[in-house]
Image 1: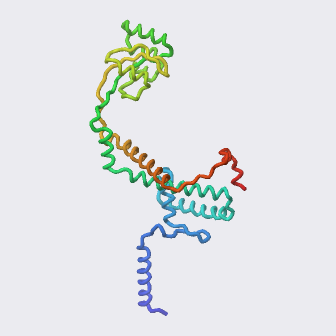
Image 2: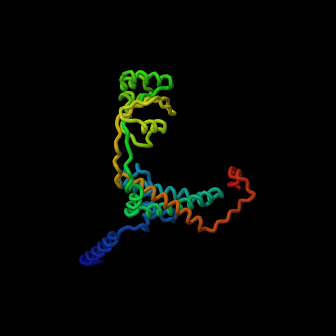
Image 3: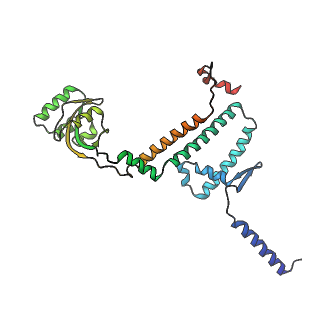
Length: 282
């Protein structure tokens, strides 16, 4: 029988060993459960969490941890039964899904690497440096269904009728009619072309002849014209980043596809055969 001093010594050693084990930080390889001998690691759980929809990430950590672990346990148990009886269809779908995922990894990495502050600054300089600022227009309109109505309104306005009053009474564009036909400020490309062309050709204070667009017939009053503020790099950062990423992805796809040894063997195959899903079950 151990003496009290020996018991205390053994207890101290036990505490020291336990403390050492708990001091080790878990890693992606840390096993958190097994299902019929199949290991589930912390890495599996982190990867699943990283791809969850945003609403799930609002759960508290304990609830999310337990839920993810239970889900993977269920998936392992269910997938083991399917793996024992894999059909041709299942194998082909898994092949496609794996290729799709790995292709996505390549494209994601390409897109991320494409955007740097230096590249954004260079593209901004190329797109906007020295560019004359465009113009913005403040206008109002009255929209009606027929040319006859538009002509009648133009006669009334030329005769002294208040444009805003007529817009409120007659315009079928009820959103702007409530404001006397006012459309606020807009730049080039924001209005349908017939409307835009008419506005650009007008002088402030002028009322147009009837203008037809796909929405009907417009009587337009141009209020003011001003120079648009030149964009800053922060204004267009997302646009520039998207262009850099799109170009990089397009170049990557072309480069890798062109470099691949591709041999198509489809001669004599009717394209309609893709509809024969029963071939997957043979």
